[in-house]
Image (cartoon, rainbow, N blue to C red):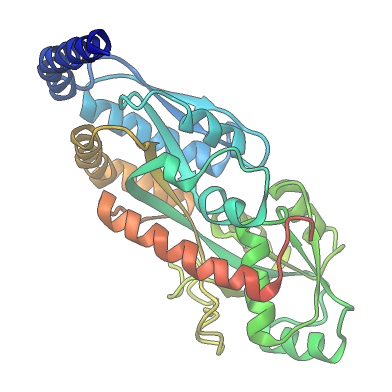
Length: 330
């Protein structure tokens, strides 16, 4: 017993000495951050909106930090592969991750197989958001949202809408709209944006929510009929399209937002440095214009503001999902 107590005492003293030696080394490493290249994980394929946002902001952030940032696309399983990769990365500030609404708010609520938790990440700042436009097929028997609501109510179960997949922003906002307007309309999930757009162009469905950037050309060419936007205000690109709120659906508001995250155990000193430089990167006129031209709305927030916003989003949309009885199989 005495020997064991002696060993424990030696171990405690040794650990204390090691901690005393390592503390200034760790502190210096944090102050010296970054001193090598960083990787930025995107849970979607190259060429899409998420990839564009990461590469545009990443280039500017790289210049602010003075180190290269390599974009690493890890698509698959509803962006869960990328999220899992980021969650398991070392918490040293050298792995960044594009976190989005569906991955952090919807997946944990709707799926049982999520290989990560919201608590695995620490927010650096919100970056931007996509606005959604509800469009109708060119031959739909209505041209305005009030006309659509009236006809759908008179023909329950006859009309359908396309989404980019079950449990996505597009799906959930339409379920919220169905609740608000008391509609019986069939959900047809597709595997991604391209097939959902083809469904509305091919007149296989009557309605589809599409991000404003992707919808722009089809609206301009009159291949679809725009009915409403899900933003709180009319969009600069589409000043003639009313908001859901204007049309009497105050609660139907959604933005497909994206933010920058790091593994949860990342030191706050590093998070603060990243946040400061992220704000500088997003403040660059070239970056702001590029995002605007693409159809993105810049929405930088601090780490604390973003954390509070994320909590609010989880609470609000969790109630919507429960009320609509949405499941990933729908």
